[in-house]
Amino acid sequence: MIRFNNIFLVGPMGAGKSTVGRQLAVALSFEFKDSDQEIQRRTGVDIPTIFEYEGEEGFRHRERRVIDELSEQSGIVMATGGGAVLRSDNRRALTSRGVVIYLHCSPEQQHARTCHDRNRPLLNTADPLTRLRQLIEERDPLYRQVADMVVSTEHRGTSSVVKEIRRRLEGDAPRS
Image (cartoon, rainbow, N blue to C red; front, side, top):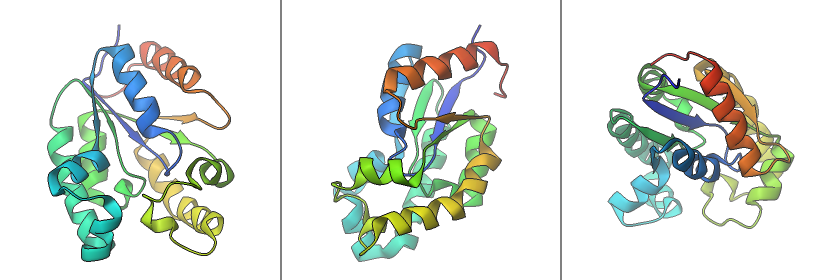
């Protein structure tokens, strides 16, 4: 018996949060939400444009509001942005309102998955792989702090990851 109302996916960019989240939501008959897509829908612009005009701080403020609102719903799988765990308000909302799953993969795997994506303002640098390594070093402790479970997506297909999550959810009694 599955005993939870919401599932929140955290982890670095390129770990597969949106892709896994969509399939997991279908498998569990939950609704899928993506905090970054919701921010874009509400503003009418892409994330790089928000970063350009409001900076990362402006984006994080919008992200906090969206995560707070979406996490109050029930029966959702929500993919969060890679930096969502940076704010303590977000960490509190996620851990108190659902099961948090950290999708983990190496910076090298992230780079392979994101190297052609121009919608990643934090990777707009001469050395994106070094930046990914810096981000994971900074954020990994926060991902682990909030996680009810850690699932590797390294060199794995989406269906394999979804099956593992379902198996572990159905075998555990996570909070919420």
